[in-house]
Amino acid sequence: MRFLRSRRIGALLLAAPVLLPLSPAAAQSGAPVPPAFPSQYLGAVDLSGAPLPPDVADALGPSVPFGGISGLERVGTEEYVALSDDSAQHGPARAYRMTIPSDPSSDQRPAVTGATILHDPSGQPYAPQAVDPESVRRLPGGDFAWTSEGWAKDGDFRSPAVILSDASGAEIKRLSVPAYHAPDPAGTRGVRHNKAAEGLAVLGEDTLITANEGALVQDGPMNSEERGMRVRLTHYSVSTGQPLAEYPLEVGALYPGARDRGVSEIIAGGDGSLYIIERGYVAGQGNRGEIYRVTLDGATNVLGKEALDGSETPARKELVFDFASLPEHPNNIEALAWAPRLADGRAQLLVASDDNFSDTQRTLLHRIALG
Image (cartoon, rainbow, N blue to C red; front, side, top):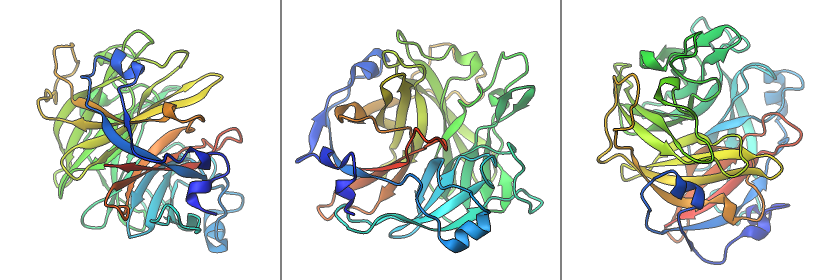
């Protein structure tokens, strides 16, 4: 099956790069109007219910499904790690090994080739709801960093976490998340439930950056159809485990009729920039989403500032791709990874969706060419 000819989205292949203007929702956010950015949608393939090799199925346990893909990272030419956001509810907390062909026109389908069960410091698989995996990146030394959203309801209040694990999935250490990210029972500060560290990027030999999906409670209300909100991008030193800097990022107003819109992933570009997904769900229509290029030059470092007051200069955003340009919604897009460059030299970005282990949602793997 050719990647460009997936069952429902293959016909969306664009004949030439398209220059996309700023979407109305982004314009409402107050973000600077960006220049047009050349991008081309290359198609998608449906990986819903992808089969697991017998040894993987045996290792994970009977009836453990493929799904919940919230993080994606390339670890070889065509080898990837796909992190499931299963908090040990449908199977052990885990990451899949996958092969994804580099050539968009290949007849070879992406395939699951292995799995790694994530383990706590004692060497045991994480207990149910002990972690909520969201994003994964490989560090220069070969270990992995991944985020867990924490918890902020039902009498359980835990800070989000940035966890370092070795290649076997064993936890090595955790970085020190700023104390004001920790939720409190009174609901007066910290992350909101399921709106915490959704994205993770590697900026260099010793620097990581996380992206919160929604605003901290003390930074103001979540976005509405009339206004946006500000989330935090937090830099960390891997060697010291300490935060280095933090910058506000403006997220757009809700799409008309939407019940949410937030940052679901972040990845580093090759020039010091970052790329993020903003996405949300519109009842009766499906998911909306965009990819933006973010630069931090001139943004205010707010590390240590417990509450934002609106005087800060946010990071700058440029629209790269708007999935609303396609006739079908992209599903719950939550993961970004760079694939090898195309034969013509353009960058190739993979975007994966999280099916939430629901029969009504799909695991799609989109390809977008940039440049």
